[in-house]
Length: 338
Image 1: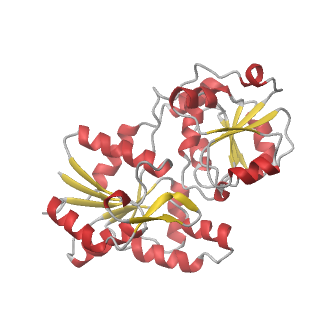
Image 2: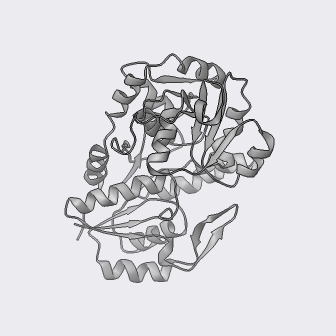
Image 3: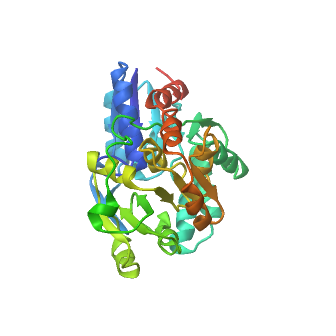
């Protein structure tokens, strides 16, 4: 099947959406599908305000039409609600072609965090976008229930996976010996931006040492405000896995993520998770068969409670999340035509 995927989030960007979609595309191709990804690199683009490393396509409509028309797709999936996503939406709607979408980002809540605006208008726009789809893929049951309350229809489950070879409990980075610090080690990994709520983690009165792995626009502010925290910058491949594994607790303070792939990556490395009781970590941790961490209303209490979790149980729980299952769900939701 010829599958057209339209997305505003694509390489070389580094985030959960890109990690998910690059993995899904590779898996679909290994199953014999022809997949064409139309991303911002296909168009003239400008840097996204506040996120200069994220390109935004400029007036992609005409060019998108030429690309899509020459590919002759038999199924269409729209990943994001940005310029490329809207171009794909209009192109498919004009031709009365069915398509699916996925809900990756809580834009209404991000707008509230960054601009202090109400979430209502943003939800109205997103509802208009996604309700036109034959199905909208969502990562967790709690997100599905939340979107239903906001009037979204046609919602379908779509879990996530983790690379169990890349993320492993061994080797563990010995942060204490390497940095001469005291334990326990509370670690956060991911994009360092304001909506990730990392300030809430670094403001906690916790024993031991806090470590932040990653890069992003909020990093200079955090370095200045929390000088006792260790900031490593971005790590990749084996360094990233051993950094996860070297933590005693992985702290995920985000209030707006729809899933949190980094939670699965931490668990795959045997590191317990502490998080707020919100969509994503709530669903991941609640489904565990052993003590793998804590999601609660008090992040400090969750951090201290997670210290009692079992590392073997963390790894065992992560092993339940495979990319094959994730690809199956994506593939089975597509609406073929032509």
